[in-house]
Amino acid sequence: MRRAMQRFHTEPAPLKLRKPTLHSVRSMGAGQNAPTIPDTDGVNDMLQEAGQNATLMDVARGILDRLVERPELEVQVEEILFLKECLGSNLETLAMPCMLLQRDTGDVTPGGYDFLMTYTKQVNTSSSCPGTPGSRSRTPSVAFTRPPSWESLKSSMLEDFDKWDFDSFELADATKGNPLHFAGWKALDAFLTDQTSDIFLEMEKTTRFLEAVEDMYAKQGSVLYHNNVHAADVTQCVHALLSQFGFAAYFDQLSILALILGAAVHDMGHDGRTNSFHVNTCDEIALTYNDISVLENMHISKTFKLMHSDPSTNILDGLKTDHRTRLRKEMVEVVLGTDMSSHFSSVADFKTLIEKLGNDPREWHCEAKAMSALRVMVLHAMDISNPAKVLHISDKWSDLLRQEFFLQGDEEKRLGLPISPLCDRETVRFASSQVGFFTIIVQPTFALMAELQHPVKDVLLAHLQSNTETWEARKRKESADHSSPQASAQPAGVSRSDRSGSVCRTASRQEGSNNSLPSELRTVLPGVSSSRRW
Ligand code: CMP
Ligand code: MG
Ligand code: ZN
Image 1 (spheres, rainbow, N blue to C red):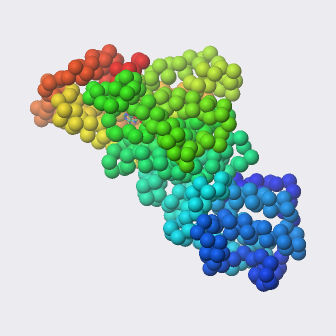
Image 2 (image 1 turned 180 degrees about the horizontal axis):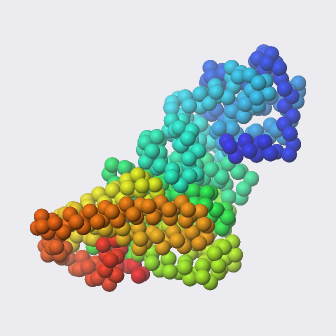
Image 3 (image 1 turned 90 degrees about the horizontal axis):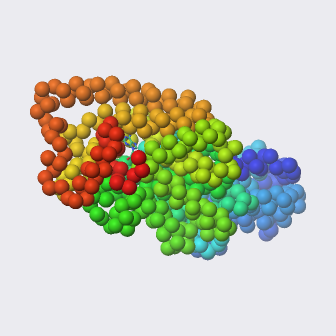
């Protein structure tokens, strides 16, 4: 809406809708061909007359068509075409003809903006007129034009979506558990509204795709951290980094699309267990992907299988073949790049690139590998960005991850496997691990991002610094608690293999590979499989 209105206001040809008088607007309904902006009942009648498949868009188009027949209003043909284009791209602009009349009369007409918006809400929440999915290209039905709980969102939430301190937990509540649908929709806004672009996504397919992706994530209760809220959060973070921290300037539209879609799907199908767990239990995905980035391979493979299994979710259908090919390549690349096993090599490579090519990636374009490293770094950095959020949000993520790790530890115990670092609820020094994760993993990553865009330092690194201090204080308390005589009687000093009974062949493989890590890192990252590149 904002975009459409901006464009509307900056159109070179000024609107030639002669100001109708209040009387002329109110009398528009009189006479057989005289169009009117109907009220809710009127729209309902029109929809009923038109039959089951009619949508609110159809009604609005009908109104526009008939407005052309009102020479006394001097509505320009270009204006009608523009309004039609808006109707095809964004439900909110549906109300535009009403707003035009409303604005020009200076009066809230009975069939004005509010009526149509109210009506829109009714249609969205009722199943009486859902439209026919897939029956018209680029003509979305009302039921498919907005995330389901959009109307219940506070306007401040819509406005805050660009900001770093956006609260995805609040979004999850406000959308009644569908935050990814909303976040994906908002982040993809530019690709849904600019029909003139080569890279245009159909609204209906996009909403079906986002719904299906959200469905394939575990929900808040079942997997505590790697669920649809985390996916929505990372999508919002990528969006904020691109739009508010200047990173969009480095990429073309297709790469921006790859990053947003990559963020939305990057943990799809996650079961709350780490790569090591999958490898050590020799399960289906470890066998499928030969122990190499098993989760990440699964996330991105599921994504493309989803698109190809059902044409109604294939959002890339409308793109040119070469665009589709490149988009797939970039999505695969960025999602595989979220495997923590490549963290240190990604950061080292990225540092070398900055040293070699300078800190303005707009000058890196002839270096395909450098641009690829930058894309990977953007998604990976946002995936580990929870420590750089305001403390109360950061703490929630830490706690959810801690609990998810503990559930894995419980299962490892049940299965007689060695308990992964950070996963043993009886012995873990979680505060210490957080200090490690924040300082060894996250800080160097954001320090590099800040070399490209200084606001990263002022906002993300500032939060990170302050949160690290908080965790350092917690760590001191934790150490004191652990060194008390009572604590030393606890099983903290018992080695994992001593306590877990039998050690399977694959489990010892994990232990062996963890031993090759710098010792402080073994207590920071629990889930890095033997496929990592340290
Ligand atoms: P995932 O989201 O798959 O990829 C990034 C990983 O970083 C994430 O899984 C966790 O394993 C890890 N991670 C993210 N946040 C934290 C944190 N606060 N403490 C420890 N590990 C984290
Ligand atoms: Mg992941
Ligand atoms: Zn993730």
